[in-house]
Every structure is written in C-alpha cells, then in structure tokens.
Image 1 (cartoon, rainbow, N blue to C red):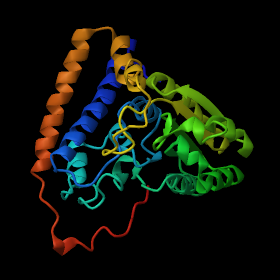
Image 2 (image 1 turned 120 degrees about the horizontal axis):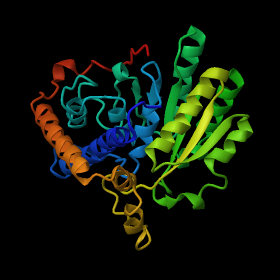
Image 3 (image 1 turned 30 degrees about the vertical axis):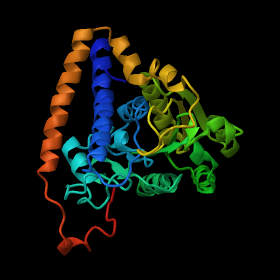
Length: 319
C-alpha cells in the first residue's frame, strides 16, 4: 500500500485513470479522422481496474491483457507517444507499427501484450508464471480477461493446469456487464469468482469502479499466489461505457442504462472522492497537455517501410 497521504494517493490514482480515459477518447478521434485504421476496443469506464491492479504489482511481474488492453499498457508505464505511434501504424519502439491495437506489446515494461482471441491470454500468463516458478525468480503472471472469456475452454484448462502445477497466476476478470453485445447474465450461469472453488483456488469479488479496492484485492491475490504458489482469481464488477468495439452502435442497450452508469463510473467517483475541484482541474489540464505533446511526437514518427516487412515476425521476449 502507498505511504502517501490519502489526498495525494487519490490524486495519483485519478491522474492515471484520467490519462487512460483521455487517451481512449483521443483514439476514437483518430479513428474517426482516419489516422488509425480498422477498429479498436476501448476500456472507457473500466479504468479503475488496470490502475488499481498495476498499483499492486512489481516490475518483475508479467501482465497479459485482453484486446481491450490500452489501459493496462498505460498503467504499466508504457509511454503515451509510443502507444499512439503503434496504434497509428507508425514505426514505434514497441512493435514497429506492426502490432497495432489488437497485438500491442511492451515487454520492457512488463506488459507481454494483448490478444484478440477471447481467453487466449490466460495460457500466455500461465506460461510466464510457470517460467518464474521453474527459474526460481520472483514475480507472478497476471492476466486480464472479460467475464465472457470464463466460458472458453482454454480458460478452464489453464486454471486447472495452474492449480495442479501450483503456479503463481493471478486472473483478473473484468465483468463489464456485457459479453460483447449480450448481457452477461444471459450467457453465464455461475459468476467467475464462484467458479474458482471448482479448481481449488481462492477468489475475491471486488468493486471494479474503486481503484483502491482493486489494488487491495490484487495485493492480496499476489501475496497468496507467491506465498502458496497457487493461482488466485479476482472478479471486478464494472460497466463498459463504450461499445464492444469502436464501430458498435450499442442499439442493444436498454434506455437509460448508459446515463445511469455514467453517474457511478470510476473517473467521476474518484474526482468526487478527491473533493478538491481545483486540484482535479489541474490534473486534467496537465494530462491533456501531455497527451497533446505525445500525439504530436507520434505523428512525427515515420511509417515503416517495405524493406523491414519480415522483421518482428517472431517473439523473443525473456520476461
């Protein structure tokens, strides 16, 4: 836990969460303006989960995100200019513009990447955690998945394997209320945190709109995973304020749902908890200024040429 005074601690969390929010909103503008090709999955409304979780982690931990992973990359300290450049298909220092949004990775920051296949990050994080156990090094494997991924076979297989082998794996389930365009309750019979007992592992259910609560839960999960070399599952309840993907019109949402969710979303709640309008405004202005500089820097990065199209085809990370 942080030793900072409560007000400074809250402002620090707010800065990180607002940075993610502002980054994602800028990404939407870049998509609309044609500076980012294709579609992307935004974590607007879910910022407290990566910020809280990463506040509990150490540099030696390995993080694997979902395809909605920009917030996790930012929370792990990946520079905004490099993130913008990568998403814009420019020759960034991350993946040279070849990964884009769906396959972004930054192993130098302990972020082993995203995966556009639902649930596929779990065996990747399992492998990272198993490597740490075999090598006798500190650290855990952490993976973020959606609640819909809990219905994928590979997730069950990985949880079982992690429990049988005694692997320090922390699974963070971001339950945002929807499995793509279908309400979670319509597709999931048993909540994620209750399923953990079937594998003989511990779990916690936490308010995913509260970064402090998420940090406490993941701090506990990490300690248990390291102390007992057993996996741990954290289910964080939140709400997605954007569509499943950038082109999603969200016609499936009932009237009034988004308006109600915006009253209790994490950025709004944390700003109210800080209870210092001037301080919050100063943070927002500073973040926007930094964001503008990062975007200008990214726009100055060259587009990768055909001469290196065969590079970056294979992963060579050691973390």
